Length: 241
Image (tube, rainbow, N blue to C red; front, side, top):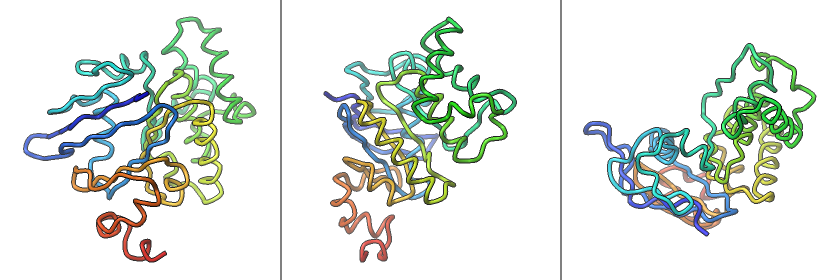
């Protein structure tokens, strides 16, 4: 089953072409990676999928339904959640409170929101810090908190936007294990990432954006050998390795 279908999507800002004629299918239970240079249009594409920006042309289909006209909160209720590059928790409130905010997308009852939040924190091994102020967390724990808040909405599709940026190598490995665990539980994941060893280890398939256009799509092994990708993004050293 196709959880997400992106069909010839374009997104312009005035005369600036951010995304041009991009198509991609994301199958249920898969991890699909999106890579490319800074400014290639990756986050703009995520924003179109998440309902922040309407596509200038083309269409997006989520769980068999066109998303035209739907806002981010509409899509969230239908099972689409995302994280953001720049993590902005409610810094003065607890970890538990932050995750409950996500849970309230699916329930109006405080007791149920707390139960869902605690389930997610247990899953991400964060229960021990549930009462800590979010503003006091390490970068790695803030990244986990961002994922926890998204998971509390109980998504069918999770969009991860550079959740490993700024992490140490051991923290990257821990995050890779978390994401693989989410997929193993049946979740479908669409991920933007610049850390190549992570995205290559995670993804079933990878699409490559360059100047707003898709220049390649394939398995990690195919992408690593693609001359266009090496020249536009990975670099000759990566290709030689």
